[in-house]
Length: 326
Image (cartoon, helix red, strand yellow):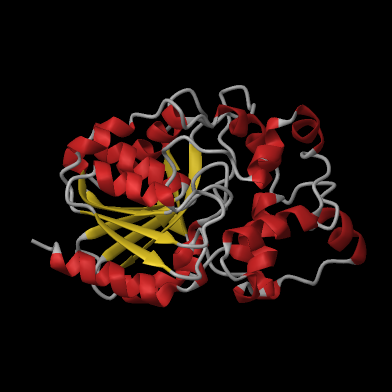
């Protein structure tokens, strides 16, 4: 079902000038292979699981399974354009007490795009993500867990709590999507046909860097290694085409948010006050609908506070998990 991959990034030769300018993001003229990306960005604890998604080829999902082997499971679900690396700062605190699984949602990270039985790239939407999370949980043998979701991953997490409440022990939403909103400019670009047509062949690194700066409250916190990871993974083979197919399907006007009123899992809502991607007012909308939900805001932090400054987020998570352990 799964296998660990040794870390080989340190053995790779530095890229030449042509690759740096045209393949690695300056221009983005061609995509990077999954093998190349795995050498650069796989973790020592990286694993791959064969996941079945209806109407798709069997896919290999990149994930990690860390912490207490027989402990209470926690599943971390990242957001649009991110990868399981976004949770790295929380892992030291969480894995001391829990079994923690995180995985790369398709078409992002080292999982990459899903493909249909003819080899074409699959268009992702909410229904497909429901099948994705169900398939992954089946592949790794998780029946019930605490789910922590960021942005798009938050939508997937709360939707699971609405449609399959017995599977969700606790729910944590970090800058979660779900309510009607205007798409961030860097995502909305892909609603325009010329961008969807050109992006698979040319997407300058500057655009990915600007989008990355935008999800932080303070862009000076972003390391060059983090920039490089986001650029590399967004320039993975097939990702830009997959994003171009996916974005026009992102419709937050018809999601079943009224179902949140029936959620009985203890719920924590975390939000950066400088979130430029999803309005901080949406935090109140979640708290108003989910019975007993708690809210914690972070001054100065942006859309992904657990990546930008994991210390306060980890402290709030551990306190919530321990208080609701019974």
